[in-house]
Image 1 (cartoon, rainbow, N blue to C red):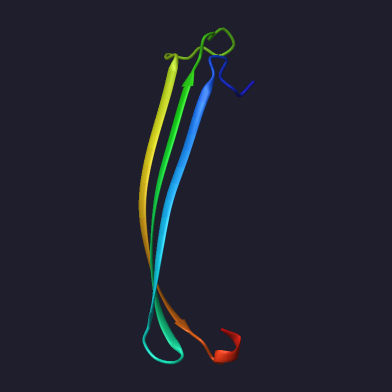
Image 2 (tube, rainbow, N blue to C red):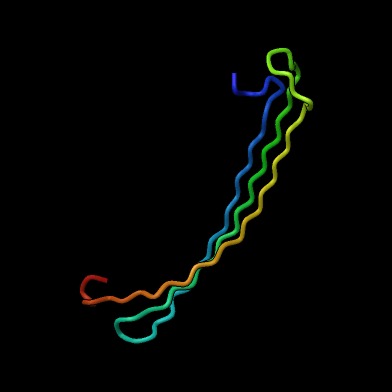
Length: 79
């Protein structure tokens, strides 16, 4: 099986923010940021099937990304 026999825990968290700044009637600037945090903890009680040199795996990832976008609206009736 692909699942560890000692159990596993997965945590995923994210926060996002966005700001729209009007430049003109048809143009807006969009600024955005996102922070992701991912944790994985696993334990292997029995290594008989696959010989692993460890009994625990811990993975921690943190990501911070930004975006800048120029938004042009041709017709205000469709925005």
